[in-house]
Length: 459
Image (cartoon, rainbow, N blue to C red; front, top):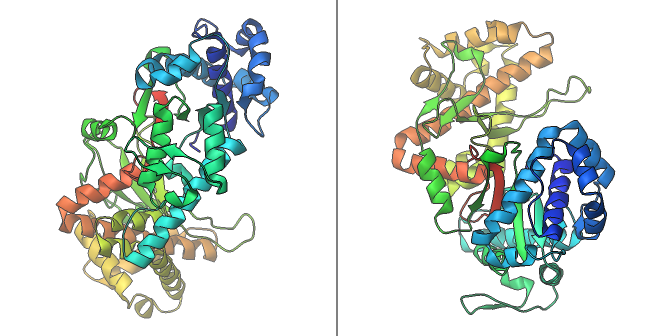
């Protein structure tokens, strides 16, 4: 799921169900949940049978909305906007919502819809992995269901519930696609194009709406947009944001040792960049060994852009365009580089010259001189400066010093390797960077059709 709290997701299911039951918008003049609860006490009870949110009770929702009034306002705004946009985005859904009474189910984390879709995603993802292995394909796979579909709640008819449950359980079923092809078995889902068409046509039929949520407390700025649903919707967003490769930041300051991270510019919007960094844990507080994990995360904006990609997905996405980039950033190679960086950092305490006598340190030296504001006459001078720099030497334990130096070495090596790949082929760089942003935001070509409710500034 997305980064919205589970109580907010459940609240949205509840509020949207009440709008459905009423067949009209909720009062937008209500100031807080206490007023809402007083106004819609009867409706809250009545719709409860169609609001399925395992693990989140009505009491949980109410406590949350009383505490966070912005999410309360957002829940009203999105429920009303959803009712309004279904007139044009999915008239068949609107025709189910508009009459008084409630036909659709509003679910979060249930077994019939969420559970079934999770099973279909896993089956398809494994089928694509197998095809890549046996047939030498390079099709995108998803290491996380949220990158395929970030839906936080679903609107679903009884038909959708039944169909999804039948398809995911391996039962025989029958669903005719617009193309004339008839789906009859889970075995039909051998790639994401089939699964995505299946989801899209259920949306078209008014039986399913996957909805991703971002907080939108300002009624005037609330918007619902489509992702991979209306033709050209993603391309339009890419064009408006000028998504592509816009250069890099190897060091944000004149002191290359002030940061272990590397940034890729992907839009012309100010400081919004894709930051590549270690997201592991030092383990110090829990007395455990440190962990390391490489990730890219969109930073620099509050609402405009969001998402990230980590570990194996970095190599998978880059590998769609450039197989050698895919190999360099494969999870196997990332781990090998990280392990080597840790050993280098440990050996720096014993013999500096021996420790840095390797290809990783050669490349870090090259990248620092080529991509940072600083330059060093020799590799030995660079790594002695690293070793003695206050950001590393002043840490209060040897373990933290080893970890910090290792983070710098593998962070600048992997980040510099990415910059080198992009700078050597800027045409492919545009495609690779675009694909990373699409994957990070669950907008890849293979991602599921869904709707996103958010503030207008959201990507």
